[in-house]
Length: 136
Image: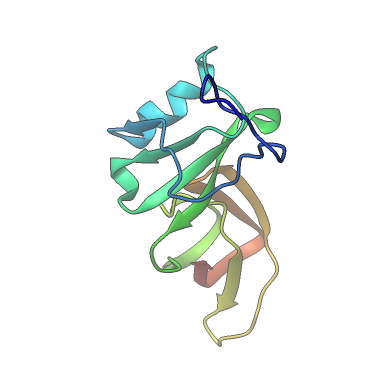
């Protein structure tokens, strides 16, 4: 073997060994969402956002949205609803959370839930409702 160049006796294979390469840190959620319009974006791009300190997001190009892939404790928030047929709630969890609805007696209730974005949901009932909405 000569010292004139590199020689590999087994095929070279790249393996993941370290921290994720974060390609951008956005100052706000609005900036992160606006970036979805950027033609330079690419599927699998990993970013962070100062509004969600400690969280990482990966780009799902097929659905034009960011998916939460890492971030601190499991976040949840509970909101009280008083005599309403529809509520638009900004939970600001940075994810599409599961939703649990309980009336004032603590019974589980059914509602129509539409996730507007990763921080906002519209919750609708067929009749006036009072109770709690928990996002997890």
